[in-house]
Length: 613
Image (cartoon, rainbow, N blue to C red; front, side, top):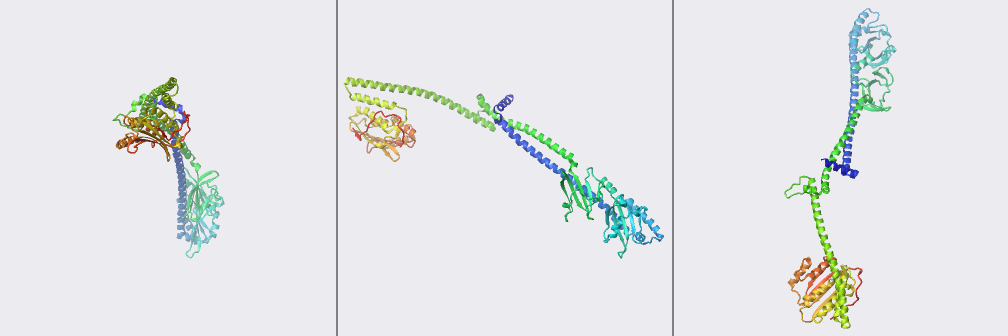
């Protein structure tokens, strides 16, 4: 384990950012960090939206609660005033002249009833009975000061609907306390006004009652009348002042019953909930600054920051673990290259099971390394053989040179002894020139002209012995003389024809050598009038020549020429055997039209006659 960690650290130091471990680590860290950050951002946005929805819900719920309380109180008071309007005692009190003694008795009785209602509802400041007949009005606990509270009287006098009670915000005595008066008209069956019941609600007391029922975090709640004046607020200091907290234009559509929106004003966001009164042309407005939830939002933000930090830290460790684990197989494979002795650990036997991808890769690597080792050993062996062959070739080159020089010396001795040129000296000269042409260069291809010169020199030597048996005919197309051909291919064919075709003839042996152009190829042929070869044997030999396999013993010259032609000119070229009429033998050699510059100077210019004997 420790060695593996040391090796891993060594690779990281060596390759740095090009290391597979480092690149995988950075990539995985980036992917995981981005994933965690994205999730955290989504969570933060979601939780922030949840908080906003919660604030909006609290704001709307609180607003509806205030609306229900206020309108419930006014509905109850309207029911009280309605009961008073149909009370016979009240009607009698309002119709009785002020000079009638019974008025005092009726007033005392009614005052007790009014006091009962006043004590039942904590928010009721006072209840008045007004009479149009005698201009007097009574109240629960009537005082002289109450008679001066006539701020409601003008609105009552100008109201002609008499259908619904009038609700009017006002200041008692024009100073204090802040009241909302409910004025309910009392009429006779003939629609004659007798007076009114006036129920005065103390806004301050009503606010205390509402606040006592509110939650810990309470929005600012306002009740705004149709003229845009505030008739209720929590602190009460802006009573009857124009409402400017938010613009209600967006909430005052004809079909709008209320909604909640987040509105930004002066850089501060507030949740504004608005709903319309079900009974009057009033608006209930709740303004809840989101700053009230700053601490909660800060806690969410802190949580998200901690989550992102932990996510990045987790991504770091996970990335490191994955990168190291992913690089483990590379370490094992690299260890094979660094320690060839471990090859045996991954070699698969006949019954072994490749139980994972790493072992499969390792076995393939091992197999490749073993193959390379075998190839290297084979190459080394071949190089050794090549060196031996080269040494042999060099040695073989020395022997022909020595023979060439020796032949030249023998020729001069023969010339000196004979007193001039003779057949023997001519034969020795031709043989020496033949050797020199063979040793002039290492080129694999020569011109047809040089190849024919080589064949002529060979025939000069051979005809010294077989001059009385063999005559040679040359049929040469001079236009192909400068095309290229594989070196030393005619001489083996001529030798084969002499030794196997005409050697055992008594006389009249004819050897015909042709060179002609056929379309895009050059055809060279050597014909003889010897005993030839049977058709079946010729077919078998042609098949073997086409297949480039080893020929029977005695045909090695043909095989050598055929193989060299195919190696230098291509597989579609080479030797084909045929017969020359009823007897004889023909060897045809086909080569391509190959142009080239002659790199070796000709040893002797010559021209071949059409027929030479």
